[in-house]
Length: 264
Image (tube, rainbow, N blue to C red; front, side, top):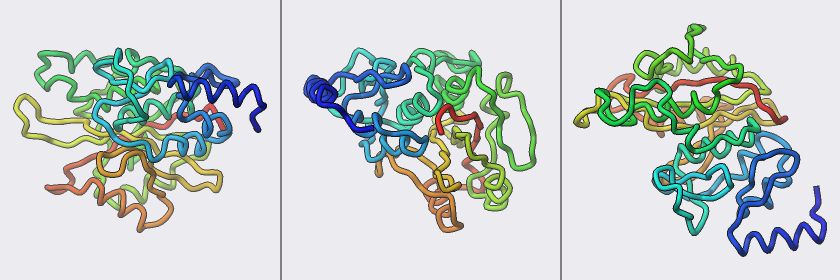
């Protein structure tokens, strides 16, 4: 949809002021720096692509008002667009699911088992809780290689970790079950030896469908910022596996939660 002259004037003023632009046809505020792409994005892939190439910054996210800020210090206004993996996943999900999820809702300790003083460590399951909080109240299911159907709401991050990323055979059973019209939120976990911790859900991302029927894994990393990896060939799957190479066999697991898209 082309911009009218008043639209362009408003957009210019908002960009100069570093403000958020109200989204059209929905209630998700658009960060002004992303408005040129998001205002014209009409598909899930286009919306996710609008966030590509944003630099990685620890703890960086977008809040429910469309401001680039920090999870732990939401009073902070970042000078330029920046995201960590959680901020990227939350920010993209708002548009794909058409839900203006607040930072407080996204960070909630859903299982009540990872607050200060937790025997498993503070925020040990942050990624697990994040993808459950984003999908709360929606029709959802875990996608597991053997077709198990665990209750996501009552599960915990120790018992529900998905499958080993390095297990190509498991991927061979997972990928054919990905469905157009759905997005797959991912939490990646690994055992750790950090004092006070045994396991961390330390990384999150999304698998998003394209118009051509293929799927891509979207996430943000310190080295590459926000980027995507197609999952259409064995070579591209190997690229995803290489990004999360194990130090010991079957160390890192990926959990996928499927929810229906609210956009084409």
